[in-house]
Image (cartoon, rainbow, N blue to C red):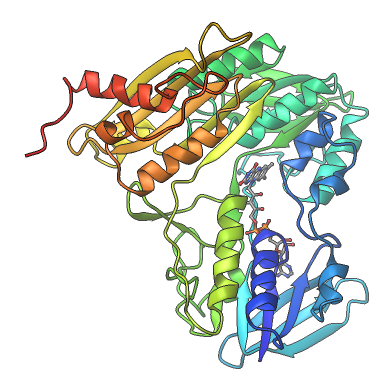
Length: 452
Ligand SMILES: Cc1cc2nc3c(=O)[nH]c(=O)nc-3n(C[C@H](O)[C@H](O)[C@H](O)COP(=O)(O)OP(=O)(O)OC[C@H]3O[C@@H](n4cnc5c(N)ncnc54)[C@H](O)[C@@H]3O)c2cc1C
């Protein structure tokens, strides 16, 4: 059997690995536009900030290791047409410009996403740059050598991380965020404000409620950035306003959503029995709402890619959905989130409320300790945990993973308040801080609910 995989970053690689493992003897052909595979976009800010010396360090795989296992790695190939009825792919070799047609029995669409370029006049200015691929990261790094004052457009995860990277490398940074809060898809205002304060302390200028309306050249060849209220001049700007799925190859051939994502079942199969899709080109099942959602993450791409590979000939393992758990390290602060924010929960018509807990992560008698802040989102009606956000100089990312399981399993604040967690003064208080956050929620709800 012949399997074709279009796109070889996280979803494509994960799919290929499973096919090699579970279906040896399959003829696999991979088509990828770029020269590299497996680039982690988060490598961009890590490189800018000096944490990793070389962008290659943000790659975890290379084409040779797969060609040595018999995979046909068509690197620098651009697939320009898929004919789902005929089971054919037409691709151009970007080096020789030659066209090739290939036949497949099964196809995996792992074509991911590209930066969503906002319709701002002047956005095509070469001083306005993008930040998703390895090539773009290289361009950002090169441009930063001569740029001093940098504008970042978009205050989500990637904009905030990029701002940190540039400040660490000695640049002056202004971050423009359209809405009132940074990282608003993952954080409620309280912790979001703390991030804003932290970034401001580190010298980053944050402009919230500031929608960029135009880019243009100045007479001295700098970049003018306009918002409704301000005009400022920079050396360059970076767009961090999210991504859009790349599914046009299958337009009219499989079911797609209005946003352009490919609709899949839990096995990553599409409306065409021989085509699977995974990663940023698809949606996820978001367990807190039990609905489909577009949440492009590496963690989703690798799981969906692996499932597409496992299920390609035989539907064996279905997705159990996600809580979209994420984390970042901003200077010395770990920020980790899972499930819904209060705003998202209210928008989804939950009778949602938050409980805020703050306390040292381990006893004061230990040589050091530090504060952990937790915002727990729960449904007042069912008392189920809906989301959680943690921030601390202590490493709290794994606690977001714990909360993710709590939400996945439908646990209540009453159960989380007494859920088994280890105690050792090295690590936590006798009641772990997640127990304590849930106990705050229980107190807010006037004590434990009677089980009749
Ligand atoms: C700045 C930034 C930081 C991020 N940080 C994180 C993070 O810390 N954690 C996290 O979980 N997520 C993070 N993400 C999100 C993450 O990068 C994406 O979710 C992930 O890259 C999706 O992987 P994918 O394989 O589905 O798609 P992509 O990474 O988009 O890869 C798709 C591949 O398909 C190829 N392709 C597409 N069309 C064709 C075609 N027609 N022919 C040939 N090849 C084609 C492309 O060249 C590309 O290599 C970040 C994103 C950005 C932009």
